[in-house]
Amino acid sequence: MTGAGPQPSRFVKARPAPFGADPTGARLDRILKSPNYADGAFVNPIGARQAPSKEMLKSLPANLRKEVRVTRKPARPVPVHPTTLADIASPPASGLRLTWMGHSTVLAEIGGRRVLFDPVWGQRCSPFPFVGPRRVHPAPVPLGSLTGLDVVVISHDHYDHLDMPTIVELVRSDVVFAVPLGVGAHLEHWGVPAARLRELDWNESTEIAGLRLTATPARHFCGRGLRGRQQTLWASWAVTDGTHRLFHSGDTGYFPGFADIGAEHGPFDATMIQIGAYSEFWPDIHMTPAEGMRAHTDLSGGTPRGVMLPIHWGTFNLAQHAWADPAEGTVAAARATGSKIATPRVGAPFEPADPQPDDWWWREVAVVPAGGWPAHPERPAGAEHPADDYEPARPE
Image 1 (cartoon, rainbow, N blue to C red):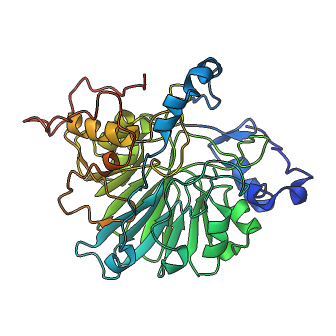
Image 2 (cartoon, helix red, strand yellow):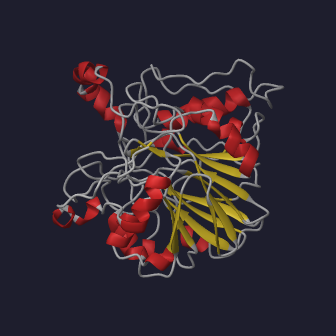
């Protein structure tokens, strides 16, 4: 572990505001003392290649063909639930309700409190409004209409999870922000008072509004500027009100630590798991649907329980797979493992305690694959437990 650590750039004041700020002072001191920081950077729980492989460059001509590119966006407008605000006006009967707002943004109503995970209301996940991946569907509700928020949880500082315009609007409320170590530098730079920040290292917890939030390990990376310095931590999150338990994966590659998180903080009533923007060219930092389902099973102690909500798909085009592939793959993985999943339309609230319908709504708007949509098999008898030889698949 380094003793001095990296120093913030002398040009920090000249950087565009969306780039955020470097950690300094007491925040930097905490980072340097973190057990997850070594040789000038935060490190993953197990090794992870962050940069795309050289084979990606060789594949570009084939992946830029029009017939391939056209599958990466929906062919028709994505259906957005029209009555979200009316539906969440009354408290959930079970005490727990989730509303997927698109990508990794989820509103969780738990124990009478409201937690907003990775809020992104911007039109592009980019530091600039004129370039970068653009939304393929609108946000289901105006951000200002989400009243009564108690906590905003951020998983890491990438633009599709930490959106400066969204944070600036949220500053106008009195919401508290729970973030991984180092990310608070960005939020303070954008006007969030230090008193409204709870900044955690892995396996640290905080109490907010009667909820216990714990930053748990993830296998990913960070960075908003051009230099790629790993000076802010990335995390998954466990949240409980003492009765209900939730897990949000943030962005992560598969790793054995999910079992430890489940043993320590589970069992979970619902998990929100990243299953999109995967690629064989960056296999260590994003999960495939099959890997995401394995993570859900690990978090459940080896036997699927609770509901898995697939996230990190459907809103931004961030990888080379077809737009509908993450959803299709999640349904197939759930059938193979006997897991319970929720596939709500954007903005449609659901309670994990309720039966979850088979709503394959994406097929209504996606480009139909060659040969048509596969008929997913019904759950076979005795499939309540995953097969002993179940292994995560890699995309072909």
